[in-house]
Image (cartoon, rainbow, N blue to C red):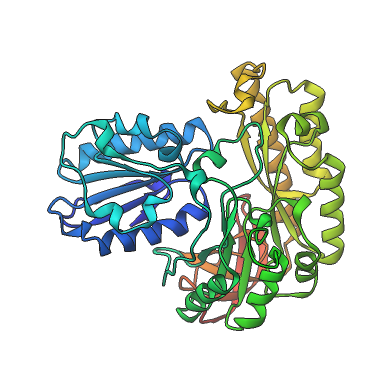
Length: 441
């Protein structure tokens, strides 16, 4: 079983390997690799089974949730071996090794290798023996791990890149993932072929800093070339979707693909982080607010109807009322629809943690205002689709996602089917749709 943080409910079955996934789409993909490698190592042969936590370090709250889930898993599964890995384990290995509930801590590189699961230490070992976490910055390559399916998913994720060469002042992730390294194009294409051949109608390309793809490969191909190559060489892919990108790194081929390739989904999630130039500079971002607005305007001309999402941080250190209002206004100025709002959370070891902090109450208030702006934008988006016809990929229980990644309720269809539907309205959360026909993915 794979689960998100909110869905943790580990079953008590002897010999079972449970993988509990926190955080990003890349973690979801890697959890499938981990499951396979753990099974190959014979971890399932242990009498009490095993629970593997694939953690996230993007916020302090993500780390807290992981620790809480680990304690619950031990209470519910006293005989199971508990293994902790992922970005939080990479950046804070001693903290997890010190937990009595934890039997083994693996780094982000170690978690993808069967050998890491073969020699579990005995219960009661000291913290030093528990930890197998190497220097992530010593890793120079990222292999293309082949998976046949993403358990419990209607769409499949494919890793194209890992790590990040940038050092945004708020971000701990490079210390969990290392420097940027790309999966060779051929390996990505083969993985997409494999998943499409296994019936996945939608493939999502994912990475830590995806628009940096290719800089370390021979010839330095860019993300746009990879996208075009996949669509040309894998005609069975009905939908190809991008996860979060950095707009300042979007190359000409990527923009051309968005304009001309109907199988490339009209949905782009942007790593904006702020709408104020001074805050962007203090974050060490590489774009300014006008560049973000112009990017959205230009892409919307190329692909009318495209849907934009974005990550925005509320309450970054030194943020004044006027600076925050620039972030609030950019929701409408960029035409954002799917907003991910993060109240600023200082991460030990980052420059932003040493900057003058805002009161936590003010940070929460600003996050609430941003969420309200995002909710208003989402309601406008839902209303704008009434009377339109949409293709919906069914995920579960008659619910699915349009090409623009908007949630839609059809009340019919099996997971993995693409259903054509007329949008009759919305209930404030999802589109309400009347299906016309269904075709197998």
